[in-house]
Image (cartoon, rainbow, N blue to C red):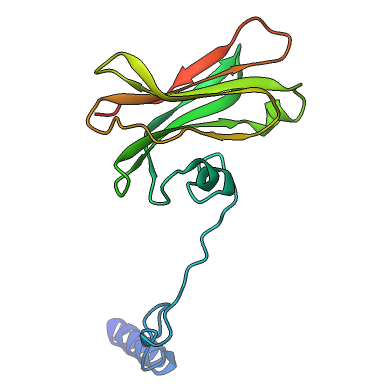
Length: 178
């Protein structure tokens, strides 16, 4: 008799739960699609970022193609144990080019005197740096190279930072990509 009373209790609980549940459910994105007469535009940020933003004002002024995407792992420019900048490589399918990118970390930039930066795309095929650029005595944070015609090569982005008053540059390179 005990198991019968338990079964009735379970049946009442299950029935109550079903009565309390709504007949349908709505999920985000499950509604009707936006009509073609009202296309949605996603606002793409033009702000610079540590990840690299090919739509940033500086990237666009340099001529970086807006479809550029990061490739390979970033390299870190370190002074002792302190990370002072990042180096990344970008690739544009539309423009068939590679780009070097350097981002100076805010923790270094906010206290540093003007510094020198170099950036480029190193080709393992011809052992040279393509699209090399240099900036002297700057406090800028974001640096892009011009496009490098190195898509058919194995490449890495290369970058260096020389703090004011230091005879030594600190450098790094991104992961080799083929």
